[in-house]
Amino acid sequence: MTGTRAGAPESSGANGGAGGGDVPVLEASRAGFSYRGGRPVLEDVSVSVTAGRNVALVGESGAGKTTLLRLLLGLARPSTGRILFDGAELAPRDRAFRRAVQPVFQDPYSSLDPRQRVGRIVSEPLRSLGLPAAGSRAARRAEAAERAAEALESVGLPADAARRYPHEFSGGQRQRIAIARAVVCGPRVLLADEPVSALDVSTRVRVVELLAELGRSRGLTLVVVSHDLSVVAALCPEAVVVESGRVVESGPTERVLGSPAHPYTRRLVESVPRLSRAARLR
Ligand SMILES: Nc1ncnc2c1ncn2[C@@H]1O[C@H](COP(=O)(O)OP(=O)(O)OP(=O)(O)O)[C@@H](O)[C@H]1O
Image (cartoon, rainbow, N blue to C red; front, side, top):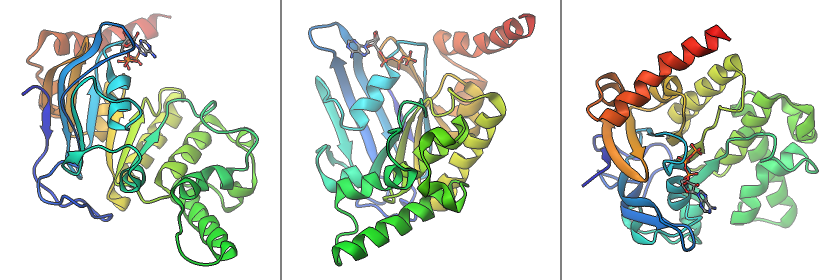
């Protein structure tokens, strides 16, 4: 099988899990995908996400990483193979799945509705999941506002953030708002597509630290797409290398990036110092 069995068996963390043991929380099993009428952009891809072991998807632009995240999020169905959640075929409308697996998108400028106050943006997943389920309408609204405030606090934003609008915040703060929205319903897995690439370097470091801290404190497992191998090394003990829609190498990040076995991975790793040199010359 191509792909990775990402890590040793572990319990599924603070938020629990139906599977437990070594059943992956999320898994692509020999998945293939073609956009309408096109050539396959994913072929025979197998990736396992085990609770507590963050996984990075790396590869050149166009390799198929975002498409793979879309399959894992249930936003697209594989043309061949399967996507499994807690060991069973993924049902994208399943509330347990929608609650457990949340996305964080790349661009904090376009992913937040500018007309809504931050408190409403952050509590949106609760409304779409019908949470909290019990109590009067007023009690449920109060509880949702409290959970949104708690999520905002957990990403280091000030208490009055909920009353303000996205344009009042910096790029890094907006990405924190997007992360608060992703964690408000108590998910087990965050799927993050280039979560820090739109940010400047020092903000990037702080948001990476926040993601690592949330992972620890909330029992969250991250699946991260990033071009930045330092982000990958900082956040993910497991790495999967995708080339032209196929997994060419996977395993512990230290080994995959530290002593790559596949020529494609070697080229990816070698391109990092070349890029830094080019940046210094500008
Ligand atoms: N909506 C779409 N319709 C048709 N083809 C698409 C669509 N989205 C992506 N593709 C194609 O699928 C392939 C994989 O794209 P994908 O965005 O998954 O790659 P990626 O590895 O995430 O790239 P990047 O790092 O640049 O985001 C590419 O050839 C791309 O052109």
